Length: 254
Image (tube, rainbow, N blue to C red):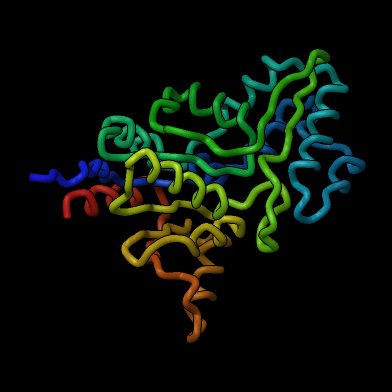
């Protein structure tokens, strides 16, 4: 008797995707770093140099200014570790870290690798996050932090340095190749650059915009368009990590 070829079993899990600034943490990590300056403010020459869609390039100038003042990497790190987490978020991340056999967690952010690692490690929460996709950062031999663009892309809806949809689609493809599939995906964010990745979510997935922030308003506008087919996922607004945890637990128990 001829045996049928063996088919590898797919491992089914839940995926939760986080933005970082104003989502995991309750502020913007890139602007929080200014607190390490003596007057906790940038000169107008640096502040006014920002150009729309060129945030990473702007942050390069910010970190150059900080380096010119000879502010040490240790001082920058200490300041970054004081940024507050959003209410209920530490409980949510602790729950995720305790359920890694069934939950995968990634961060897709326009911040940078050093800020995110410092903040998560200081809180003892780095273990909750499987992968971080953000702009690479390092200190050069002169003690200046250098921040690079995450990637290049051709999406005209996103900042030049990062298309979160492209990152998410590539991650899902690689996981599928590794025989990991997701029964449900939760996308948690707040900003305008979180809209693009919601278009690759399925009908049984959940997009969770923060109440009162840009993403909530943009999703409401999309939902109000009669001919819109770009948004299939269910929309659930959140105000705290507790809201997200409640939704996550309910989905896992159903």
